[in-house]
Amino acid sequence: MLNYIWFAMIAASVVCALVNGRIGELSGAVMEGAQQAVELSFSLLGSMCAWLGFLKIAEKSGLCALLAQGFSPLIDRLFPEYRDNEEIKGKICMNLSANFLGLGNAATPLGLSAMESMAKRNQGAVPTKGMILFVVINTASIQLLPVNMAAMRSACHSAEPFGILPEIWITSAASLLVCVLFCKLMERREGRLWNR
Amino acid sequence: MEQVGAAALPAVIGGILVFAFLKGVDVFDTFLSGAGEGLHAAVRVLPTLIGLVLAVTMVERSGLLDLVCTLVSPGAKAVGVSPEIAPLALLRPITGSGSSAFSLSLLKRFGPDSETGKIASVLASSTETTFYAVSVYFGACRYKKLLYTVPAALLGDMTAIVFSVLTVKLLG
Image (cartoon, rainbow over all chains, first blue to last red):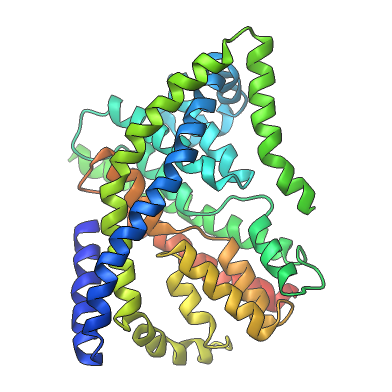
């Protein structure tokens, strides 16, 4: 899937730049994009190391397992494959909590660590249902307090930076619900194909 | 409320450390062994990031994005949304920094408490950078087939677009 998307993005850009006469700008964009990615991964490196360090502490102290037990009514239903795996459940919980609290820097490293643990247990060539659902939930927003947006709004002299909270909650909840329902539907359908 | 948001990070780190310390975990040694793994993880996502950011920069610079925006703006107008929102809806799943810059420009131009400003705020904060999440998470574990991941994620983004307009129009 990403093969097609990536190819389409680049091919369409080249064609578009040719038509618009922006080919010079485009050639600058290629190298600039690559450099930006390195800068991004350097800034990611710090938060990655820090959060994987904190994750290890939380795992060793049993906090992760405690979190996994606390949320297991929800997590077991969403990720039935990992019902008996406290390590994976703990990592999933840590990532979802980080997202919920708006700790974007923490969510990526914790999520990568959860994905790696799930990948380690998966022998197949395709991702498991749990991995797909986990990534899809991470593409939706479950943030409780959108602090960055509020900061941006107050910088623009908003009378009530948090005035749009109900709208944001309803919108995020609807989007998350649609994502999860769609995944659950596809999980069943794939199961049926599997049995034939 | 801003303080509550700012307190989240110190509270979480403090909570993790105090709990572990009381349980007798040698916190610094454990931190170091975990942090060491971060190095590999960051290196593993680097190729994915380069591919992704490179393609996104090309789409932006070639004028392709502007072109797509002009194409969809009549549709936006037809449902009673100001056409300036359309680029945000397209940018949001692709680039985090690009879409924040664009939301800021919308807030400045229309005012944060205007209808357009509110829709922009709701839309930008109720979705995530879909392509970043999908490619970084799956790129790190090197799966080629993603099955229904992308359709599911995009369906969520579309729901967010519809609901951000609906909620602001109905509640605001």
